[in-house]
Length: 486
Image 1: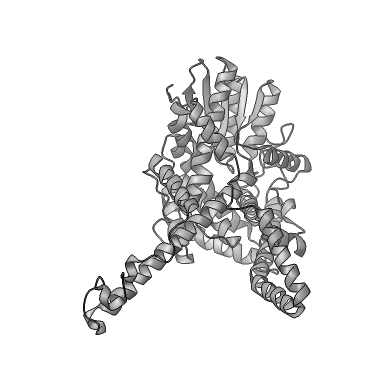
Image 2: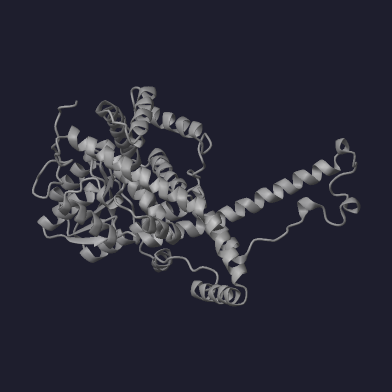
């Protein structure tokens, strides 16, 4: 198999050659790009594929179609009216991250004036119009979120252990240094009562942690030029500003400082219950954002996905931090990017096999193009399918969660029966410990939901209530909008 590249005048896709003779056209999109919608529709109408493969799972397709039918352009309705109990349930069940990811796409789509995921709706309509088969190729979102939390937890635990070992080493060296009055060298075991502290391990990594570390090492080895580090600055407001300024310069924004100021005013006014968002600030951010997304999308289609991946990584990491989760770039790289690159490559290969010489069109985020191309030569191997099946599943946790819950219930029930005061104290302590986190989540959910609603209302009034791509039958085609504010 060979991954031949073929590009049109708009540089919107690559072509992968299948052994069956099928040409697999893979369109690289950005999920908030008007141009991507035009590219998808144009390609499907031009090549008349037998199959259209979408980077969607069944649940996400259903939600997008429902939003389109309800006229909920930016998907803001699903963010509204969350009760306290719903927020608590969401926090405890791990649904907070998908909620904040969805919120991020709603806000980004409104700022850009583009329906998030509009290219998939457009592809669905264009495929049905020519009678093409539609294949949903992505992993279920719940499985992706479960795997992301799993690898984040284990990798964070490993990082904590390494930091603790480093601290112990520094403490031992400080105690044994001549300046500390102890003399000798830290390997002088007669002073420390055996093996020196920096060589001792209180508890080594578990078998599961070693397996996770090896899997991540394999993922990084497959893509060594993109280590997905934190970037040039730490995860702070100053660090975020530094990264954003660098992205804006790379993306061709004419006045990055002015755009940042407009963004600050926009979020300040949007978060203030009495504030009013200025449409001029939205237009300033929109102009820069469209330039950024389209520039990085074109680069990714040509094989340089560094900046698009960095942009998307910031979005995922921001959603994780809003949900109160640890940020692990290695986990994001493995689960959100590398695993799904392989899954999508395999599903595109299967579509090429089944069409027996007829063309296939794949619609995927441009950040997956490079990985799909890299995996194409091995996409048809049985070992690849076995690996894909493993990636499709939520990871198995140590022990049975039902057994753990049952044992916990038995223990608490026994304590409550024999020592009711102790049980009451325990429940109170748990409530006291979890209250700050749940309170933070509830406040964050409410604030972001109100901000998204205010932003969408402002954008709708700016654009005259017109669909983001005009009204062509289903209302998801290119064009539309007004030039009043511009």
